[in-house]
Amino acid sequence: MYTRKISRAYVRLESPAERSFRRLPKHVQASYIHQAQSMGADPISVYLQSRKPALDSSAPSAVSYVQNLENGIMEVRHAPEEGAEMARERIRRRVVINGKQQWITGLTEQEYAENLFDAMSGNAKAASAQKHNFQEYASGWFETYSKPNVETTTALTYERQLRRHIYPILGEKCIEDIEVGDIQRLFNEMDGAKTTKDKARIVLNMVLDFAVEDGIISRNPAKSKRLKVTGKQSGETEPYTREQMCFLAQRIPMVRNEMDRTYLAIQMAHPMRLEEVLGLKWSDVDLENGLFHIRRAVTHPDRNQPEVKETKTDASRRSLAIVPSVAAMLKPGDADHFVVGGEMPLSYTQVRSMCRRIQKDTGFEESVTPIRFRTTVLTDIYDQTKDIKQAQAAAGHTTSAMTLKHYVKGRGDSHTSAAVIADAYGM
Image 1 (cartoon, helix red, strand yellow):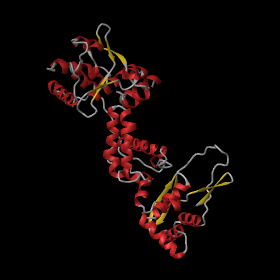
Image 2 (cartoon, helix red, strand yellow; image 1 turned 180 degrees about the horizontal axis):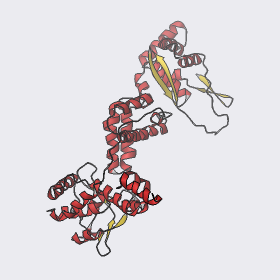
Image 3 (spheres, one colour; image 1 turned 90 degrees about the vertical axis):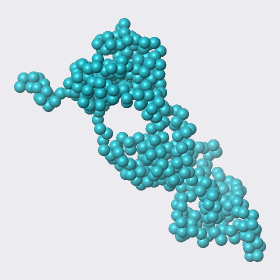
Image 4 (spheres, helix red, strand yellow; image 1 turned 135 degrees about the vertical axis):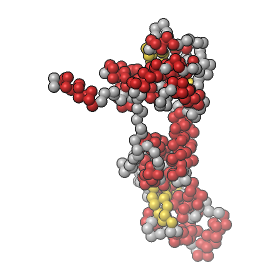
C-alpha cells in the first residue's frame, strides 16, 4: 500500500504496483509468490525487482516511480482547499522500456503510474489501449459531429479531404504521436493549389481540436506557427469579353431546344449562381413586376443527382430585376415546375450536356461556362455603375469584399486609366 497526502492527511490506497500485480495472469502471480516465500520477501517487492532491468537509464521519471513505490510511499499534490477546482492537464512522459522508446500518459499521477507498470510488465494490450488511432477517431468525429450537422456538399468535401489526403499520411498513426513534422510532411506531399491544402488543414484542425477537448492531447499540432502551407494559386475566373457576350445575345434564337434557350437567356443576363437558376420555379417568376425571386438552390453534391436546398446564405435570398428582352422570351409553365428542368431539376450531367448543345447551336468559340456568366455580369454592373454596394446586392454576397475579390474584374485597360487621369487633372 502507499499513502497519498491530501490536505495534511494520509489516505491508504492500492498502489499502482499492487494493481499491476493483480492484473497479472494467475500462474504468473503464483510464480512471484513462490519466489517471495523462498526468499522471505514480499511478492510485490520481488515483482518490482524483476521489472527493474526493463527500464533504461534514460528514463529517470520511471525509475523514480519504482523507487517511491518500493519505499511504500508516494505523495501526490492536491489543492489544499476542499472543493477547489483546478484545470487538469494530461500527463505525457517519454520513457525507454526494453530499449524501446514510448510515451506513457495519464490524467493523474496514479493513472500514469498504473500505465507505466502495465507497459513495464509487458501488458501490450493495456499499453496500446491508452492511445487512439487517428483514422478511427477522425471517422467517429465525422459521423457523429460533422456529417449530420453540415450541408451535404460540405460533408462530402470534408470526407474527401480525409480520404484522399489525410488518411494516407496520418491514418495509421496514433493521435498522441502526431507531431508538427508529420503534418508538414502531409502538406509537402500534397499536389495542387494552396486552397486544396487549406481545406485539408481546416478538417485536420477540427479533428485535433476535438482531441484536445477530449483530453487526448494537450495542444493541437496543426496550429503550430512552424507549419508552412504553400502551393500554386487557384486560377481566377475570367469574364467573357463584351464582344463575346454580344455574340451570344444575338444568337439566343438559334438555340434549338426551348429549355436551353431559356437557360441561356437567364444565365447570361443576370448575376445568378447556376444553383439559383436551376432552383427557380415559375412561381418565383413575377413577369408583372419584372422580378426573379430567388428562394432556393439546386446543387449536385455527388456530381450527378440534384439536391434541392436553401440558398447559400441569407443574403442570397433576394429579388432581381429581369432584363426586359429576357422577360419577353419567357413562357410561364406550371407554378410548381422548375423553369429549367420541368417537374424535376436538372442533374449535373444534364447541365453539362445542355451547355455543350448551346455552344454547338450558337457556334460559340469557347466553352459555355455558368460561373463565367456570373463573373461577367457582375463585372459589367460595377463597370457601368461604379456602385459596389449595388453589385454586392445583385450578387447576393454578405460583404462587398467578396464581390470585389472574386467577381469584379474590371473592364478598363492602362490606356483608359491614363485617359481618366488626364481628364481629371486637365493634362
